[in-house]
Image (cartoon, helix red, strand yellow):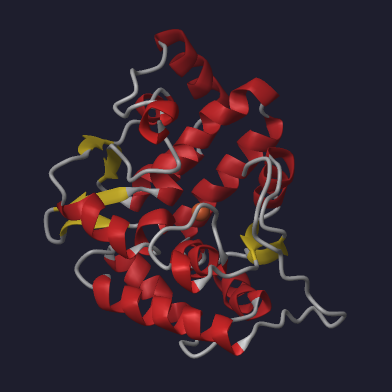
Length: 267
Ligand SMILES: [Fe+2]
């Protein structure tokens, strides 16, 4: 979510169908084939199993409704096609109603590795599989409801909880070792290997208040990842009073950033 976008939203026709060009379908094909090669042994088993449930096409971009049909069966969620950017209020309200907003455009070929805004590949391949998992779905729903009820000034703080779990979460189990479940990781070939294998980032045990106190930048590989031990942890957080956690985090204060300010990097 930002102020402007260079991407053009794909508008559904009067039957709700979104048309893509052959080139756009080819880009989807290349992305999905590549990520499916990288993810075994790196994405957690819940994600891999959830991806199989959705049985996404590889030769074309799926329609949101195809994904929604499966999600409804498992958890009652749906995918809602939206323009590339929506505001916090719309975002939280959609999640609070178990509707996952998905930007409908797909990246161009010169942005296969890095993309400034979420596209349909990130949204559908990255986010929707785990919405078939009741614990993950409950967490996302609780987040949406808390965001819809939060004061405006609390929303950026709450967004950190989403960022360090739904987008960039890692999970560690004795049997599997370190894996990822975050949509920003599983939909990015570079971040998948970096998040799990690089010695650069910190990997901290997940603690919701600690997460709320941790700053991030959206335009670089992460410098901190939070690691859960089970999806049960997310389910437990879903039962907590998230707005009370925000108050607690505020009292404790923000952690110092572990990355340089944006201006310093681009200067
Ligand atoms: Fe995302």
